[in-house]
Image (tube, rainbow, N blue to C red; front, side, top):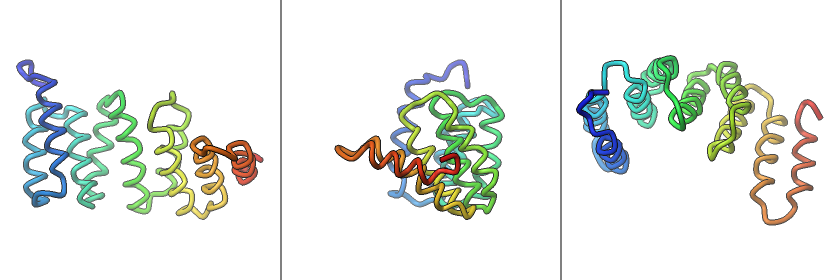
Length: 167
């Protein structure tokens, strides 16, 4: 990141740009996002993550995957690291690399809890289905859903746990 960059201003401009996603031509969207990322130092993991997210959002998974990999290897941290892991794993699943997707997401489940826990589980469930492990996927997804129900939480959680391989 440039020493002269006002980080809060940059984050605000980035958020405004993402708010316009889908309202502008895809090529223009990517060009403007690339310009924002270029304000950071070359190879900045946040810039790499945002570039990957743009490619991924436009369905360009093959372009997104190496950017996610570089962002994570470059020390991406905080909530962006978790988002990158989820998005990268989803991209890998879409590229047919299901085993790698599952490995990333299973490791992510062991990380400290935050507001993205259910997203990690949901994307893991998708990868498990693709790997032919639909019963385990259902157990995982239903177990997470049980926390959000106004009633039947314990019953659903027990049924969900029974679907998991360690039951």
